[in-house]
Image (tube, rainbow, N blue to C red; front, side, top):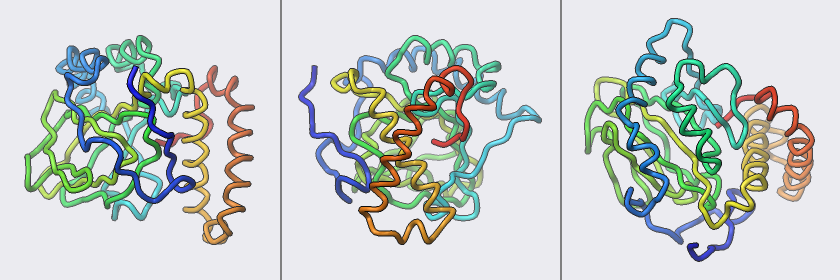
Length: 253
């Protein structure tokens, strides 16, 4: 078991997080082979799915991070809750998720030509976020990903893994769309707190959604945001048995 770092959560902990390496290699992550050993098959599954006429991605819900719907997502699982009806065309992906309880979120992410995702700190330091390259039009400098001051290219069928709490950004200045498959994997040292972490992150995501919908809520004092997020947390705990059976009420990443 690795040494536990103090839990960090966005907004309520600190605006900065710099306690871990920018990127992790596959050799450092025991679970990575579960994904990379099936990477070519996963790529085929995703490519077939996105070509279906009934397939639709949605713009990421925080408008300030990417302009003109440049960043879109499609969720299979979001913070411990599977999104019903999304796995019928990706049986290999579903099998990987079922066999690793620490994989708490999975989604397809696209970044259209000319789009960028602005630098931001993610949700927490309690999990790894890993990108599997599906369709990567170019490498650096035109298409890439940066954590703090270190830039790396995506590569098809390979993983790019980092800790979401670190400052990160992405860009695609190529002429075609970039597609990746994103996994959020709880660190082994936090496995016993997996459900708490999922509720905590989902609570903040709902709060961010409220910020997007209402400037009045966003402009409230921070202590009131704490009260709101506590109530959201309690509501999510109450809803968990229902959502575990029937899927998410509101999809988010």
